[in-house]
Length: 206
Image 1: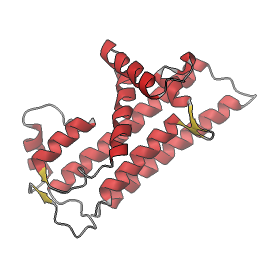
Image 2 (image 1 turned 180 degrees about the vertical axis):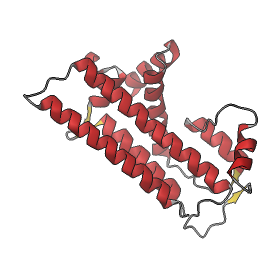
Image 3 (image 1 turned 135 degrees about the vertical axis):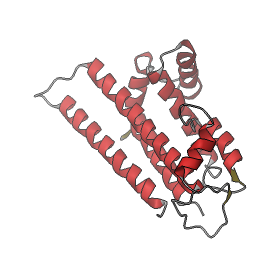
């Protein structure tokens, strides 16, 4: 199976996320509907977590699938890696007694990549700028999912270091995601598009 099928599948999922967002925004702008601000915030929190989970699932499936040759790349490069007979053997080796596979955030992906892959490979080929954005995505993801002192502190530091002109009323994760990066693109859209780009970069490695 060609690896492109995975990135195309993810794109379709993100298209559905964007469609849901458009319907919500349309309803919010309509004179016939009134959506509470807290409901809109919950929507963005939930859709962002869903979008990150979709990316995590993509990375997991691709990472594992390459190790037992379920997916093929179009590159002529020889990908040096451990080779397993099937998915069960891969999981037994990777999990090593752990209850679940944990390949992200980025530092975990890099650590596991060094164990199972060598030299040039789809997971070591992430552009530097994309690595920065991916780290930001997980700072926001953790601030939404955990609401701990540590995750909140990291999120506040991220805002101060990268978006210090943002008004105080836009400095929560949900409001930040709704804020505009450009005149016609929210931060929410920016991050979804980045994860989609990263998936395509990985599966189209050459």
